[in-house]
Length: 249
Image 1 (cartoon, one colour):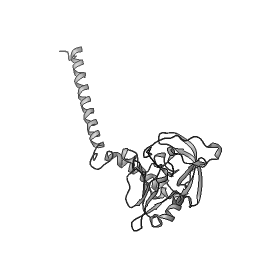
Image 2 (image 1 turned 90 degrees about the vertical axis):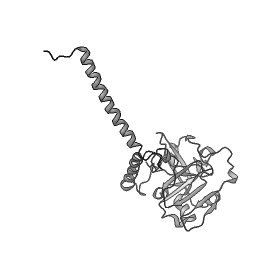
Image 3 (image 1 turned 90 degrees about the horizontal axis):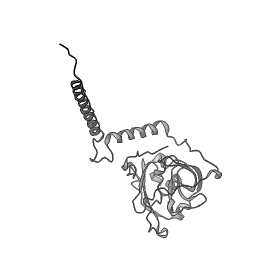
Image 4 (image 1 turned 60 degrees about the horizontal axis):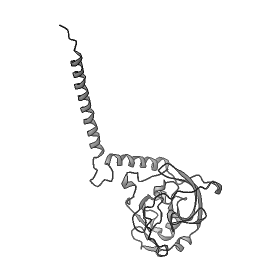
């Protein structure tokens, strides 16, 4: 008796096999999706496994690659280009520069301070021309001038240099970033009030913005209204939307 299947039987067999394989694949995909979303919505900003991977990447970079001895490459003025007006989070249209001040919240034990732009300008002025890099993939050589964040901290929050973190926010708190202290105190990190030889324009963060050459642009917050030093990792706008906290180059 022949065991050869008819074309109809063979087609039925293959269909059943394909259906079972598809079902198994769907089950694996569903399990993977459930794993990725473990912890999501229970205090996590993105799925816990993905956040763990980002945290691991940060630890590797900070423990093996990052050093204050690492300085970004600088360029001559002839290389300066036009920086995009990219990102207007926290740059409200009704902002009045005459009413601006900077709130400083030092590490626990020191009194808060309210500063003006003249207070910042009284610190030693430094210029830096470097390749400003955006996480979107573009970069532009840009010149910034202002006070080193390390000088600012030593002057206005001297007990805060040993804090592990510092957070910054716009005056309306609509945009905010968190930094690890080694990056904040990097010798090229500036509180900048000038760009390409001119006072900052509103769209670039007037009157005062952060410039961290070892970070992508998402960390270079515009129009700083508050600086707070602390013991725990501060909230970060883009970290809450899936980017890693470190965001280093």
